[in-house]
Figure 1: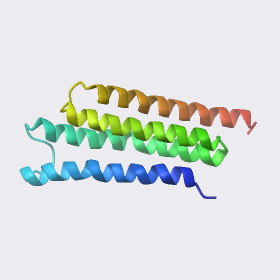
Figure 2: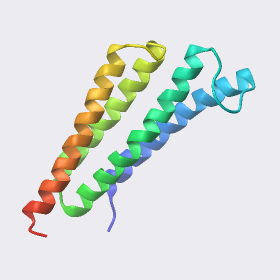
Figure 3: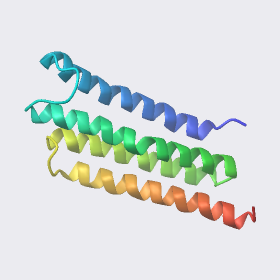
Figure 4: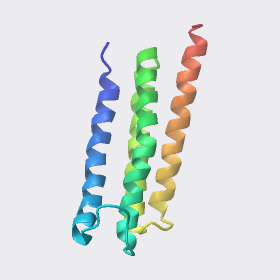
Length: 133
């Protein structure tokens, strides 16, 4: 079975990860620092933005795939996938603009990401319970 909806969001997440990773690599090359960070707050924010993305994206993609495989309505899968990606973009933007500090983009990005994950988890669970598996 193919997972066309999950494939779209996995591809978008991969592109976003490359963008975030490029920012980290740029700082590492600039400072000739292969591990850790230095006193540059923007460098630290770039590293944490990339790491935060890699902490959340796998679970979202797993839940999208499980939902799609188990018959959760495709509209829900698309909507929640879009919500998650938008949340991650807002979070990354807020981290860059706020230099790792408080920023509305970071706040709303986190809320959207959490709501998408929670909604995906509930949708997958409900789908399993209601299908009497």
